[in-house]
Amino acid sequence: MLMNNSLRTEIGKLLRKVRENCGLSQTEVAKRIGLSAKTGHAYISRLESGKVKNPLLLITLLYLRACGASWVEFFKELDAIDFKLRHEKVMVQLSTPPTKRKIERDAMRYEVGIEMPSKEKEIDFTRLKRQIKDKVTVLLVKNQIGDDQINSYENFALEYFDFLAKLNKAGMKMVTEKYQRAGLKFHLLFKIKKIINSVLRGEIKRLEAKKPLPTEKQERMAIGFTKYRITIEKLEAEAHKILCDLGVPPPWFSSYKAFVRQLFKVLKKYYGRDQELLNKNLLEIIERWKKEGLKEEILLKLKDKIVSVFGIMKLRGEI
Image (cartoon, rainbow, N blue to C red):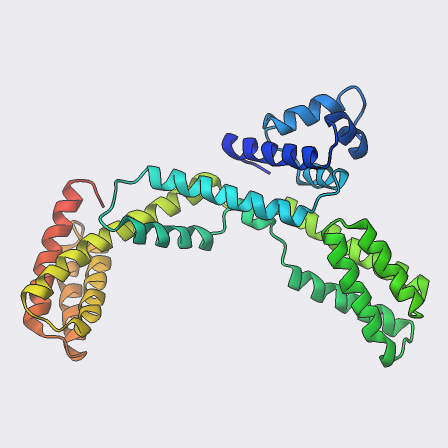
């Protein structure tokens, strides 16, 4: 998985913390993973220092298993760190906006929406459980298991999967023994375990093969969206002043500001490129909002002001 230096360093710190919490040395972890005695210690040291450029997801999972740690919790914590690093990088590249807190909130929501790479490592457990349940049902039908017992086998599968996801070997053993005592057939429980392991291995392979949007593209998208939000805030602030000066009732503000946002989209598309199409589209927007009950004289004043402010921002390179 491709990642930048900051994220590699954070992964290393998290792995080191996991190892120290379970009281293992780097050599012991290397041995449990199956690395050679000669190179294992050095590799673990480099991994924890963030010096392994593109560590395989499988190595990270084996490391966590060696320490008896939950990879679910690990990736949740890593995801939060990765998101924070990316968001800080985006905000540093922007000039301070007039409503910074609101824009930061919107930017963070947008970043979640474009799915940063670490988020692709979060597994959809609902989907996996449904997949496991379907496969187990097929197995049980083939083995002519009665309807009265199917639920018990399916419950075993889901409980076993929950413990496996947390790498809780004691829990996996406990739940197997519990359902054996309840009279479930051992050979079917064994086959169900194989189904679960197969589904999980398939998910890991899918995650390793999945290509996220390039980091640079994600950052450009996030920066572009945030600049867009800053521009909209400035234009709406200008509109707000005009509406207050004209004594427009506050309940109408949201409609007039929606009109301003439509003006911005048209200006961004045609300004400085096709004046005829620009004028045509601006008039169409005004006519449309007149039909919604907005006053033409106010719409025209807003249009003139927004076009003027947009032109100034364009000259300054802010758009």
